[in-house]
Image (cartoon, rainbow, N blue to C red; front, top):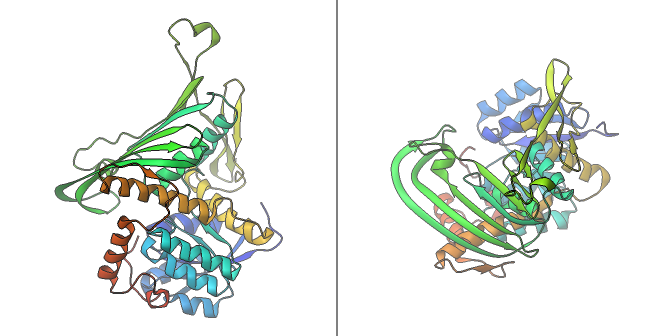
Length: 397
């Protein structure tokens, strides 16, 4: 995946999310010239810069002034995305921003309009559908292995913007109506394995109707997802088709001779084929001996990347290709905005007594207005005053 021109890239926000991005940027050395990192914490910025051989900054404005950047990888908290993106776009810099694109749709629109006005590319680092196993699932659906999709379940895996992206991509349709149920319950304060502090168990369920007839059912709890307080972690996905089902990592198809014998299915596992890149084992492809046989080839098998890192490389390559070829990013802000819209609709439906909400949303919801009010209380600044927000201190993620 060698490019004719390497792009100069800087990373902003050296927190937990950045730790996943940093080694992948370094691995894509034929695509990117990694020149700068920026974080308000000087020790964090210095440590990352020393490890990856870049310059360290504590101010985004100073970094942009000193470095001629083509792309900025923005891994700061979601509260800050609109402010930094609008500033970087105004400076003529292309941006890949971590998820969520923003905390409300009006702030996402602010980012989209800023990028469009400045003529820069804006990509969103939505990596759930980019994971090799998910690319393979989508390939199975495209080949019609399980027939026309009827129903999708996503239980206790991430179902915020990530989950909404996943069910939307797998459905192959556009959401037209959503019904949501939410329940907040107080718990003994607990810190989970990712060092996130919880004082309540936030549970929600969504029922989503798509325009192609597919229905998706999602369910999530922050405490179950964290595996805290003895809650069992049950990660479950199922895609039901007219001819079979994909349950987690197994494809279930009924052979013709079993159609009149109870419809007993034959399970076809997703098989990972590995290769070597230097001293590291690298995923070459995923395949299943279905009829027809389906194979997904790893486009990054020439890089020493783990399976998890492949999806991050994919999103970083997407913004690079968009800049180098003057094309649209593969996912982009409009798709990410749809993910946010679906999650907001679930919350708004629950707020309105489980009333189905039609999509697309045409007005700012009370749920979003509440987020804007909380933002003002938390930071002391209106969320739409972009310039003032550049020097705001955001919690590390």
